[in-house]
Structures are given as C-alpha cells and as structure tokens.
Image 1 (cartoon, one colour):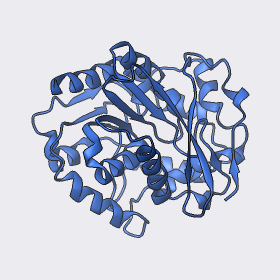
Image 2: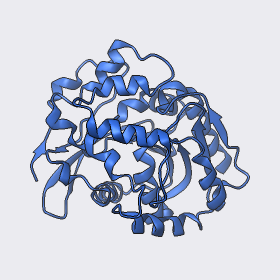
Image 3: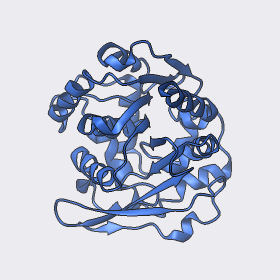
Image 4: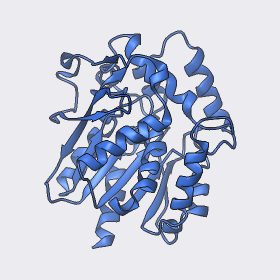
Length: 300
C-alpha cells in the first residue's frame, strides 16, 4: 500500500486549533503501518468522550466541542480517520474499504484501551462508530448520533444520491467549500482553509472520493452483512442512546426514526432536533457540549 502523509506545516497556525497532535500507529492486514492522528484534551481522569468525524472533514470539526468539554472537566478524544486530517492517506482508492476502516479504528481503540466512553458521531463517524459500539459494547456507556446511519442496502435519500453523484463526477472536490455549503452558517476564510489543509493535492483526496461510494445503500454493496450483524447488537444495546439530528440536512433527514425504533437505549431519552446543516458541529457546538455533559451527568 502506497501511503501519503500531509506535511506538518499545512497545519501550522490554524484558527481555533490550539490542540497538540498525538499519534498512534496501526498495522493493516497487509502489513502496512498507518499513523492515526488524534486529539486528547481535558483531565486524564475526566469522563472520556469519543468524537468521530465523517466525510470529508477531520477533527477540526470538533474544535469548539473539544474545548467546551475540557472546560467542563470531561476528556475529549477526537481522532482523524485514515485518509483525513493529519492521519496517513492511502494513495489508491481501492485501499479504502468500509471493513478496513472498522479494523483500523478498532485497533486504535483497543490499543489505547479506551473504556467508559460516551460517543458522539456524525456522517461516516456514525457508520464506523456504531460498528465500534457493536464490536465493543462494553467500552461504551452512552451514544449520541447525529446526521448519520448504519445502512443495510435498502436505498438512499435523494439528498445522499445527489451527493454521491457529485462526489463521483465533479472534476475537483473543493473540501473547504463543501464544509461551508453543508453548514447553515457561513464559515470564515480561515475555517475553510483549515478544512483544506489536509489535502495539498488531489492525490490526498482519494479517501474523500471513495467514501460516498462505500456507503452500503444497495444489497450489492460490501458490508451489508456486517452492518446487519451490528444491528443485532444495537438492538440489545440498552445504555443511554440519544438522537440529535439537525433540522437542515437533506442527506440524513428522518434518519433518527430507525434508531428510536430499534435501539432499546433510546427509550426515555431526551431526544432533540438541533439547528444546523449536515455539519451540525459547525452550527450547534454549544448545544452538543451540553448534550454530552448532561448524558454523562445523568449517569452520576
């Protein structure tokens, strides 16, 4: 596997990003070593919160939430998925598969021996994060899902189909502008530049190109069977499980219903609809901090 690494200088002086980089190396089944970047802020003995981003963002998406959680005495852990942010980037689209991503993040999670986690996940952070919950339910004490799903080949929304068509056919993927377009507020020039930072050229965008095509929205997609098995675990998951979808995301609109209907941990939870677009972290960061802090506080 040919692996690319974004130069460190691309991340120097980013707006609202005071966090020190941390790294952990995982090994692919083919023997390739891959470096995963993550942020780990707040007191070591604070209740740990795992923040998983999706496509085509990176941990920068959680910058305000990281700071807000740390200020409340919580430990905020935000990794970059392989292919994004400061994490290594396989150079070939064929190197990116759903199951590989689950394996890489599973290795990262278990190597760091993270336990007692409250998960917040959005977009592909949910597809991968919910697979982690299903594989290691004992490591998670609560889950908040936003603008995400765990598809099993039963179709896609019109919003997702439009995004899939664009992502596969557009001659260029303007990452920062995509984040701006998927947020209800207008991002600043500095914020857009920070989302562009991980991608100095198109060779680094192979993961961003491939991810939409990996979402298992047809029966023929890979990972349908694995996701169905994950749902069998989630249908027994009775720890707190809250939905916090946004009111302005055409890609995942209505997606909270399947969780509320199938996951026992959703019963009696204070589900909310947040203000925002697809990238709700940009539009409602303070509300997300409050939701996470309150979920932890309810556990005592």
